[in-house]
Image 1 (cartoon, rainbow, N blue to C red):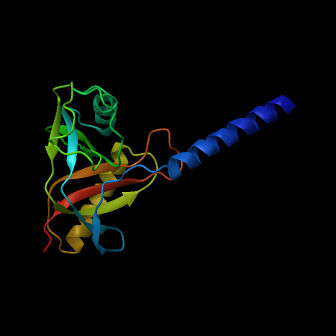
Image 2: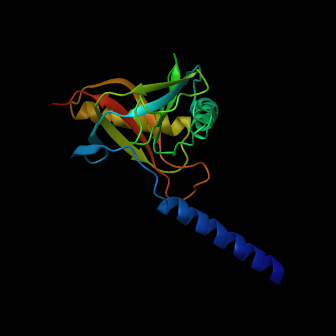
Length: 195
């Protein structure tokens, strides 16, 4: 019994230590400026960014997240022309829809289309986004298709109530590694007309 308690205590301490590490670790995050904060959403301005994107026929979060993540992760972990490791950033962008879905990794700020190593996988496209204004709503926990739809609907209703014009697909942003259990952060964003 004593051995069981010691082993259980060690496992709990290791689990908590790793979770604290994930929470405190400094991962470069895509910058944005908060333009306006409402009760349950905010308006943001995102500057241009360099992204690695993979598109596929996936129709759900689960389908897109596993296959898309594997392809993009292999690129940043050395499957590129220079066999160079590229730091992971956050958030991971996902555009899940009925025609063609995509997943994108934001590249670290030191990279642009000219100096980023070319991916070995031709399915991965390197693109530069344009500056955009978005509305964003945040939620915690592990994301799934039901939560993504729920918060996209909530954001859409809030925008309609506030008379804010939006366009394009509602997109999912995931900020945490799958093995981070505590303090998880997810967002839904959509492009808006803003003056």
